[in-house]
Amino acid sequence: MNKIAGFRERSLYEWNPTLWNKTFDQIFKEKLGNDDSWELRSNNSLEENLSDDEKRLGWKISSCRSAHGTFRCGTCRRSWPSARVTLLFHYRLRSEAAQGTVIMRPFRQACRGCSGKFLLPEFSTEEVEKVLLKLIRKIKKNCYGEEEEDNSDSFPSEKVRTKPHESSLCEACSQGICCVED
Image (tube, rainbow, N blue to C red; front, side, top):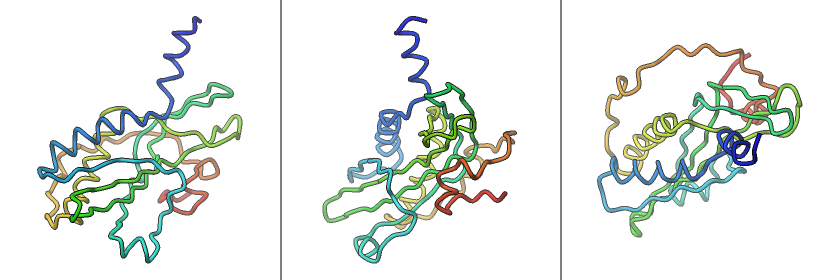
């Protein structure tokens, strides 16, 4: 295997904030329909609860507990899909500055074979779009007072068969925020 091919193979399974940022910028410009500017940042220590100070500053929370992602262990090279990737979002609009901020935390999973460190997920472009469209509906409702549109047909639900969720390997479960019951 040459170095370029090896790099390409590894890059398919690495966390890709550029994909999230590009998709975020595109969707927010297209779907928000106002002059406010929004930015997306990541923070791997983001908590599920807001402090009283954060609430006073206008922060709100949204989470996605069933995103479809892929993980790949850098040690043993094992990869696995998961339909139970948890993403946490804190967001707020500072209307006086016409500036919105979204802070995202992807929760990680550990390799069953290595029981090593937690690994960040990789997502398809379609899954990133799906997650961000759900988020923008929340933002429209909570920051702009718009009623949520009925988007039940936006993404037809596909029954995805996956292996049982392994709570002991899930960072979100270890913090008590994963909705999957054993």
